[in-house]
Length: 229
Image (cartoon, rainbow, N blue to C red):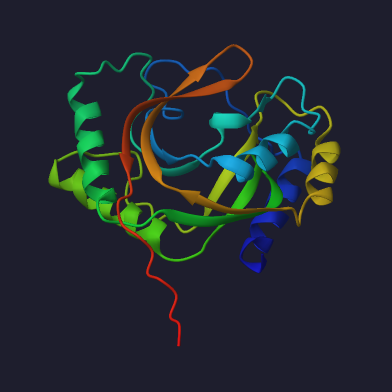
């Protein structure tokens, strides 16, 4: 996890110095929590993530679990409360994602290591191969071919993760959050095999976030069989 060592140190320092940031319930046109392309873990990996997240004491903050847990592939647009089925952008996102996922094998990411950061708590993602990067690049190209701009603004994603907590207000006990993260810094949740990419909408329930699937695209290819003599 040496690739995340600096990120972890920066997160700890930010919380201890009072530099934490926090989210507020979404409003129309906000730059965060708009429609996005994501990959959601399932099975035992999802259960392990959810079980650990449930143990963090973070009253008043958005603690995630179950199908809320996700790896963000791409942020697409400012927040909209209503995205109808016949919305042109929604259709373009779905078609671009299907094109990008076609013939790719499932994305395989090992989820291990827990870290605080300025806006919450996350689990690191360590790709097993370059499939997730290929999917990300293909999706960008498919969006561009449809003349669709997103919120990435040329950003190159080289860090993958699943958020367990988003802070929803000032931190009362930042040291307590850091201790919890330190206690689970080496937690290993296993390899998530992500067979479906989704265009999703985030919904604030009053106390937490739910993820609503708008469009889906399954991977149809296979990983090459291991060489055997």
